[in-house]
Amino acid sequence: MFPIVARQDLSTDTRVLKIAAPEIAAKAQAGQFFILRTDEHGERIPLTFADWDAAAGTVSTVFQMVGKTTRQLGELKVGDVVQDMIGPLGWPSEVEKYGIVVCVGGGIGIAPIYAITRAMHQAGNRTIGIIGARTKDLLFWEDEMRQACDELIVCTDDGSYARKALVTEPLRELLETAPKTGPIQRVVTVGPAIMMKFVARTTAPFQVKTIVSLNSIMVDGTGMCGSCRVEVGGRTQFVCVDGPEFDGHQVDWDLMMARQRIYLEEEKVSLERFLAAQAA
Image 1 (cartoon, rainbow, N blue to C red):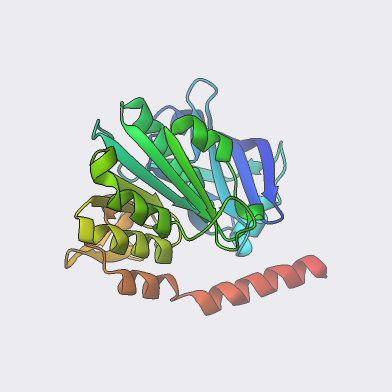
Image 2: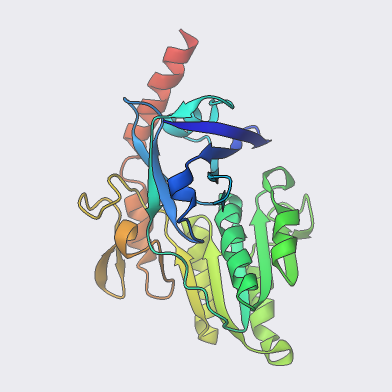
């Protein structure tokens, strides 16, 4: 059992949970994830580390309540417990002193990009952050990102806060002006698959290495079930054991996004039954 030690509601359906998991916290690194199960009858879902504290023995994650399991998880309160947790899983981010690194986070991806940005900054890189969301209400951790960045650009799709733009717009501007500020050595991005796809498309003409963190469907987390398979550079890879980070220019994005939708009908039915049971 893993107790909830803190909960923060970032919006109506976005939660931050801090969970006591000392053995996991002791080994967590930026870019990795864990799998949890809310109760003995629940499904196993992967969640990315947003933060961790090895000394306190806690890990934090940010998620949206979009399906049955995330709704159950989001209803937990301080003192409640999660049935099972396993991690850290996946390979950690490749963190070295590259030079100028641009870290792009969209929506819930702001949480894991924060951990990566902080690690890049601590390694001596000049870190430029770009974060975006559909509206102001969905933005979070701006202050945390500022602490990890030498420069931060904030965008909203609807212009309700900061700059009205998609994250790819300031990214392209940075790439185009790079000769004045120094070459951008690496771009790292975490967010919706469609956003990461277009971040990779934006950087491709400039031949800047672009790392993406894939959020494919996952079941066992050991590479055995095959649910998380993707094609990278024409080769089948498994996000849970070969990733979650890959070269964004090599990912077959159309296949990746098609596979994300394969259980949409089952997920819809599961959520409807859960909500009906709650209302009964």
